[in-house]
Image 1: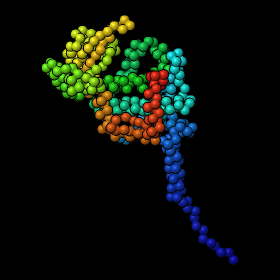
Image 2 (image 1 turned 45 degrees about the horizontal axis):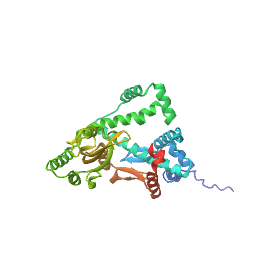
Image 3 (image 1 turned 120 degrees about the vertical axis):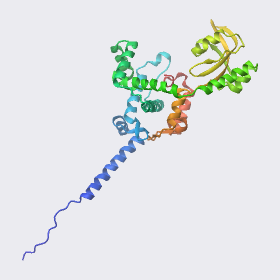
Image 4 (image 1 turned 180 degrees about the vertical axis):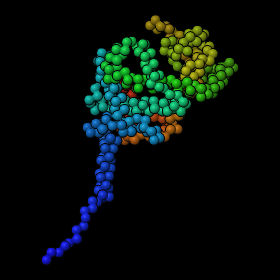
Length: 350
């Protein structure tokens, strides 16, 4: 006797299968992100960082710096150092050592800040209806080529020094420079420099009332030497800002100059003494100085208002200082040591 058993039709467990696939993908993505952000210096991490544009720094929901663009610029910088023969000036660069890798990491951090700054400048310019087109870049590049020499020679130099093409030069140097130049014009329109001018005029009035230069400098100067009565020490004219050279050269000893304007601010100079040393005339100077709001100051204030965030485990965004910095205290301490002994270090000097 045959018994017919009911056979249930096969029904794939699609919901469970989809959930499993999604979970697997999430695990893989999480693993990739851990490699990119927590272990970027591993072999696989370096491959991911250089080939895929994972975000390093964000401005709101937009990406300011990616791992791949940063890797490109770091490689170009490394190429520059390794293409030079610093031995002729008693210096050497070796990025293969632990110390050398840390020095390259210092320059990488500088690149992050520069790339972030370029992006902020572009965003601020676009907010003011400034747009640098490809045609603008082409025209500017042609002009620059004429200044530097033939196109072939420039291409050869870019390739030798940085491993760049003309297109790289246009996007990494020319376009950011054009946005910065255009935004600088807007900064000059927007910033009120009258406070610095008012402060220097108050100091000038005090000098006319026969108060001593040292006293007025201590009261009104914004320079680092204010506590020392504005004492700058001995200078050759060539070491001074161009705007200061002629007034310093012609003024009588111990007689304050009139107010002098420079890109940095407003100055009143005093020549205390002169001497001839090794065939050059040196001037012992004091200064009363009031600082203008520089483009860098203005830009930093704008950056502090932006929703900037660093995603990398290596860096953090210091809003109060408007810059990207190392999270690692070890790297901060290393940088301090390098800066203190920078005299023979081309990675700091160049």
